[in-house]
Image (cartoon, rainbow, N blue to C red; front, side):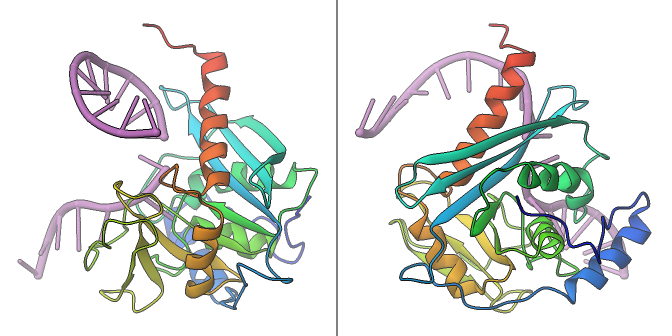
Length: 236
DNA sequence: GCGACAG
DNA sequence: ATCTTGTCGC
């Protein structure tokens, strides 16, 4: 349902050097604004998007899942494909960005906010995968990776809901937050059309404490693994 | 000064 | 990301 801004077209690339230029240019288009987690203006449909790979890395499946306010799946899609290039620090969007966009565009129901398995503005050039996707689609996106990009100041306390705003290297653009008591935290940062406070509140609103990441993201991850196993089933 | 650093 | 064995918890 969402579609790429025609004026930006696909900002894809082949060389890392050109990729840096694209990231700096798109980073200027990132919008950090409040997006209430509760109330009349709060998102009522949230999506999670993730990409899974075959063990040889030659095949990939981009999955998007949309949930309603009761965390019930109302739409989901699987887009098989091939990763554009290998992984390299800071260039994740050029590896799985295109497939990620294709999955979101293939949805029948348009989500009001998207949770992405990658950083947002907490990126060396201010444009992690979540921001890249958010700017091209011009929809609210929140970055929720499971490991920090750079050294993290400190970890949040153990209970769900505890968080610590990162200051080292990144000012107050990101935070480490515990979505499930007793498990490692995730590192949230605004992707596009949300600010950090909103991103934190939305992560809590769309997670239940049963998983380490927001439910839509968990569902997308599970779906990508299922899609992969249908092609290359577990041997043992 | 150099290296490490999302998936 | 993916592979891998065992273990803990609901």
